[in-house]
Each structure stands twice: as C-alpha cells, then as structure tokens.
Image (cartoon, rainbow, N blue to C red; front, side, top):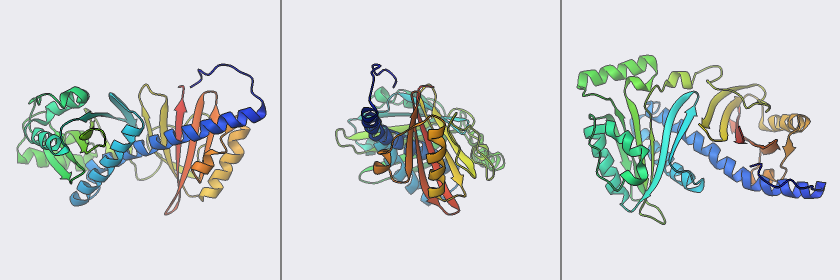
Length: 320
C-alpha cells in the first residue's frame, strides 16, 4: 500500500488524493468487516445458540452473503482466520456443476465419511471436479437447507466411528465445556447458483479447539487485542478480534454504552491529534463512520445503534 512514488503534493492535492483513497478503501474495508462478522455468526450458529430450524435458515442466509463477499473481495485459496484466538479455515471456488449436485455430494460425504472433507475443502478448486476422498468416518449433526438459488450443508467430523451413546456423550461434554472440539470438527459448505458459472462454493472448517465460551464470554472483553495506536471506543467492551494470518488486515468489534454521535466525536478529536490523516469523504459513502490513515495503515470506524448503546467496528488494513 506504500509502493506509491514519493512525490510532493500541495495541501489541495493531498486532500484530493486521500479523498480518492477514502472511497476506494472504505468499500474494501466495509466488505471485510461484514466478512468477519459472518464468520463469527457461523461459529455461533454451529455452536447451537439458536434453534435447529432457525439455524438452517440462518446458515443459508449467511452463506449467501459470504459468497457475495468472497467474490467481491477476490478471496482465493485457503484463508486462515483467527477469531477471538481460535482458528477457522475458509476456501472458495466456482464449479460448472449445479448447486444441488454439489450439496448432494457433500451431504453424503457428511453422512458417510466426514473426516475426508477437510482435504477436499483445502483443495476446493480441483476437488469439486474430482472423485470424493471417501476417507474417514461418518459425521454427526448433519444439517442441510437449500432452495432454487443455493444451499448449505453442515456437520461435525469425529475422527472415529461413534454410536448413538457416544454421540450424546460428546454433545453433553460440549454443553459442559463450551468447546466444539468435544463434538468434532466443523464442516460447512455453501453452494450458490452464480452469474458466470453454475455454482459458487464456499467452505469453512476447523481442525482443533473451538471454545465458544472462551471466544464469546458473557462479560468482559473477548480474547484478542486492541488495534495499536488506535483509540479504543470509550465505555466499551470488546466482542471480537479477527484477522487473517499473514495478511495485513483485521477487525475488532466493541459494544459501547455511549451514543454513536458521542463516540464519533471522540474519534474526531483524538485521532487527528495523534497523527492520523482524516478521510472526510468516506462519511459521504458511509454515514456514521470515520476513516483515517497513518504510516501505511488505513482504519475504518463504523457505528451501529444497539439496544444498550452502540456497536463499533474498527477495521484495519495496511502493513503489519
């Protein structure tokens, strides 16, 4: 982001330069923020925090949004995401097969050999056109929801054969510990009918600990950290820290008891005083937001009203 030639700019040219960057970067950062929020929603979903029937529709709705965002952000390959300290992996691809065919395939794999699905997810671009791996043991908790435009399949891979008694024991262990690994490893696939290809496919999976109670505590800050050198929202607690390993971006989400206007007024005062350049035109594209830049870092602050105050998202992109 700092590869631009070193040139001297007048104040007017500087304002024009940052205005152009503000509009471009704010759109990218906003997509990224929603992308991470989607992942957090999926984790809450598979953790059983909502009823089964609602979970099916929520998985379909959020999967459709993820397809749109991965396409708009040009995400490719395997992306390793840390969300409140825990690791999930995501990949995406397009396929000439219909979404019903893809969902049928992965539902059967969930039912027959869920463990092998992770290898296919990691090479999604090629594995969709190949034969199933047929490796491992049947999964549990198979969920499917689809319509004419797309659908989802979700299950847990156990790594071993398990009868009904052991499966219920695993669920009971999760209810006590809050760690989804006590049930198994998450396998999630969304296949959606696309514009330029029959199907756009997105996969999410885990291979280790996924401690939901630790990730989303009822009180206090969630695991993670605050963006270095950036004002933390006043009177707030941190709900989420998410970043892609090896990539120069991340997001933090907070819940503040203050009104959004008061919060933004604090950013208007503190950020420029600590050396951050303001992107004033970003507000035109994103009301109730602020955008700043400093030494190769772009920061977008967005606010949304909440029941007890304001939800604040701080999206960071730049060199780390």
